[in-house]
Image (tube, rainbow over all chains, first blue to last red; front, top):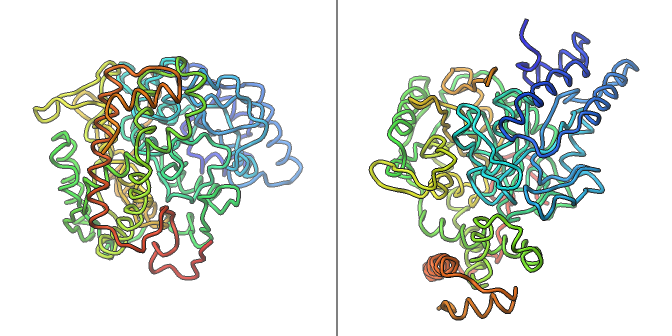
Length: 471
Length: 70
């Protein structure tokens, strides 16, 4: 029989509801993994055994009383520690916030609890989510499960290493420039950055509020979709929240032929600055999906240089506004590399910020009207490299020395600027056995269609997440 | 046109009562230079009727039936 910790969230829900296993058995099995593996990989900032087991007993009691706990009945979920959960501190990976106890749940946690999930604890991250490596001097570097000398990628590093090692079937990450997709790529999971505003960010620590999103990392597209069916929806408490009643996350996951699907291959977007092994695999995928009937169309993304600079102006300006008070009082307690990234935001002229946002609206519309009129999704690598060593600040790529941090976010952040969904899928490994991912980007508010396409690629074994049983 | 390194130093001192080291000043200068250059390009190409802040709306989603804007 398959080990409980290898069950998908879907499988857990159906098994508990059929009373083949109990919520307490599920919780104990996953908790054991968290305790034995989590410490080795610096996965967790907070993990409270008593809370977990009490919640599992509560779910079993509901079932015994003939009540339905909900669509995530008994599913263990890890949350990135910038999301409020009542009675737990929200550290944001920082010492400054280590005693900031939340007095109520964030909207996303509240929705998960109402759906019967068992929130296991708070996952480690890059300090204040401002960095793509997962290195954290305060709570320990998040370590790559395929080789702990390597980085997980970030900022949601604990979210990435937790699902691949079966500590939880689903984790939540946040993504401002790639922070869900980068650890998904480097650790080998699936990860969805949803459309901006589709998932409420109420009571979550912002990095750059007009770019921030929350989304799932998991070992299957089906589990990403299950999660999204619970957490998406309008929240009047989040000013960026949008109505999404028309999106049907479960209805689209059908095995179907791909004859009518058009995928844009954005070769010029990535090829020059991507590891040859990864770009070859993307080319191979373009050929594989073409054989399945997908129409693959070569596309170019317009005005990329301006969009990159505008994205940076927005991100650093908003981050500076978020951190101004903290820096005034606690500058010395920041990770020195994180505060360096925030500093320029205090000097970006207001006109640059405003013009960047105005350009963003126009550029975004252009991508929707011109690119997504021709294709249903865009294909590119998630990261141009696999996981670097944790000690590597720069790497050689195609003969040139490049800064690690800049490389890691180079292919993801532009899709936060656009605002639409982007899913990372595990598509291969390097000779050293380190995974890497491909991204599919979709039209704004077509997250369900994008997951539907990714689901079909998963069923065709074009992408596949592999679990690590032993470390 | 940005403040220059002396100007950055004065603003930082005023805001946080601290000084910026050379590495920080160079980092700030690089990002500001890119930011101002891109602002010039944006001013040249942007339409006059674009809203000041970007927000997702259902204008972005074509072909959806029964879509509601908030």
